[in-house]
Length: 171
Image (tube, rainbow, N blue to C red; front, top):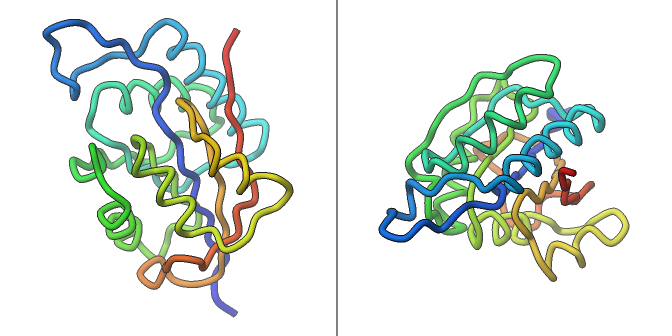
């Protein structure tokens, strides 16, 4: 039997838009920092601990993952990947397909619209209303969890089940 794989897709939390600042360098807002922490608590409480994290190199994505990771019981290795910043569906799928076979659960931290398109492309079916909610909106700090059996290198559109979709918010 082929291995059960899990892909967790995390959109960065709410970011600031300071004038005269490059998009890549935008930091999280106060709300974004609280929501990123809430995302980490949600991952911990749902028992979704990744074996590997692939994170966009943009400031807001790195800050989101760093704040979320503080709430996990174990700290997975993180690869900061330039290709995830401003990536389209095809680039994100290529990055995910490069995941080592030893990884069962991968977390990808990135940006819209690419991460939403990736989730919608991969999900053939969903539990509950997760697919409907993902189609409607994939807001900042949203998390989608997809599962399937197979090798990362063979992951294809329509191959996964969307098992969860959450939008953790901090207080």
